[in-house]
Image 1 (tube, rainbow, N blue to C red):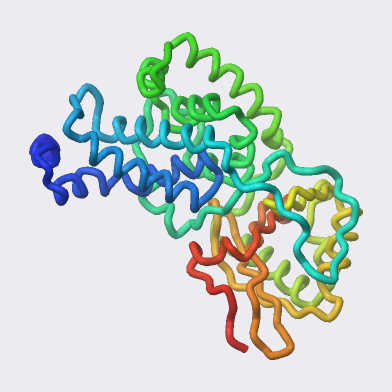
Image 2 (image 1 turned 30 degrees about the vertical axis):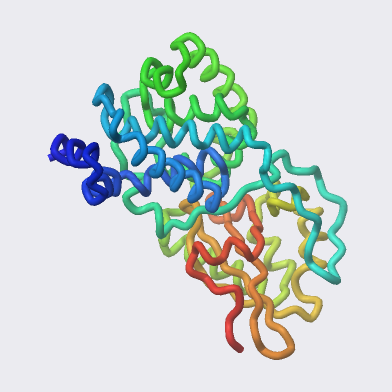
Amino acid sequence: MTTDLITRARAGDGDAFRELTESHRRELHVHCYRMLGSFQDAEDALQDTLLAAWQGIGGFEGRASIRTWLYRIATNRCLNALRAANRRPAKEWDLPGVEPPEPTRLGEVVWLEPYPDSLLEGAVNVPLGPEARYEQTEAISLAFVTALQVLPARQRAVLILREVLGYRANEVADMLESTVESVTSALKRARASLQRHLPPTGEREPAPAPDSPAEQTLVAKFVRAYESGDIDALLALLTADVLVSMPPIPLEYQGLDVVARFYAGLIGQGRTYDFVRTRANGQPALGTYIRAATGIRHGAGLLVLTLTGDRIGAITRFDNGTLPPFGLPRSLPG
């Protein structure tokens, strides 16, 4: 069947090409997202990949599978995008009337967007090669994707292809037009850097199962505390080393004391918040809306919660431009 589709696609049959590639579309989009850290940039890279594949299908020699061939094209399109040096810049604090406290530090990753769980079906339950070290669900978490963005582009590609997707070193060398020695060296450096930027394993309790009663209860408590402006109740839900970040605004706050000061100026203070539950990067997330005097609720952004045991270990705030991919409107009626 695949051989027939390839023959027809080489002859210019667009339907055959779509049938040949459609089953790989979602996993390729996730691959581009891991490489670029941006949902929209991943969409652009995927479209470039499929166009290049359509234009190049006549030269497909069958030395590797169609899937591997598509990953080769997608990876190199992402590397081109990263080299283009037109990445979005950091943004200034954007909430009028709120002066944030001095941050703990400035984040290393300037640009990052969340990924809707609704699009992960069929994208993370994919066949993995023998070299895979990370579960697909772990490798889509915000912590992992953020750590990837710190790596140099080529090291990032090598680590994803080798340890997330499980391709062998010789296969990755072929994809990147490199050598096995170069791939092995890049992987060694990437592993060391990634471990420095990931939370230490074994030091945190595991998160509750997705959509479990424990997870739902914790999220409900967070929503009640936030909506009511109850700072003490909110802080009681957080770990002592909780991290609040808000890409592309580079401000980061870590620890209960500074996080308390941050939220003291953000919640309450006459603002009324409403939340719409969703999921991002395998984690609970909340579309956030501020009610105006007219009653209309304007989208303020998306909060993604990283849970550890019965507490929240990290809160990542994204701006309202991230709402549409989650099927959430920019505003809600009163």
